[in-house]
Length: 192
Image (cartoon, rainbow, N blue to C red; front, top):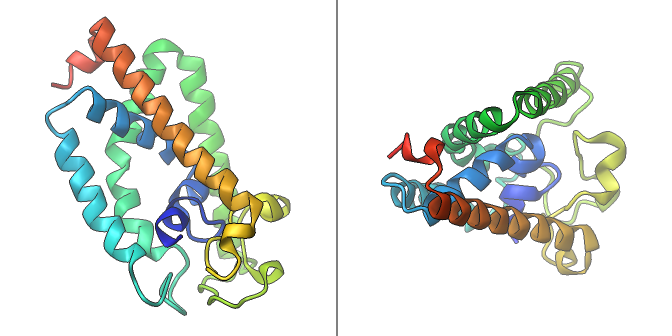
């Protein structure tokens, strides 16, 4: 539950707090499929950062800052995110610019909530009523995954949607990796 939550939980998940990292997740999987030299080391390092934090007995760290257990792994996704944006820009500069612009707008909105004190910066413990569990996404909060309480997490439909999103990102990454490998993508060859 917490491993998935570090990726898609509404208050803790790195892909919810920075959706642009989804491009990095796709790119990392594509490079793993393509057997790029750094990809296996990347995957092992990512697992070394995220898995121990998912096993933490205090779930997301009690009264610690929201999302902090995913920060190290999120930083690791920056390189594949940049490489994925570069590959997108080579195919469509407009799509890459729009994606980056949307990501910056989301982050500016989040920053305003932090700076304005509208978002509770500390985690909520298991047992917190779902209505009180925060999200920076405002009105979208009810439809976002909430993976902080194992007593009901499996029965909460948005959690299954979050799992599906992670699986789809992985499948897209596999498809991109296979496509690049088959077609000998020039972008991919440049990073051997």
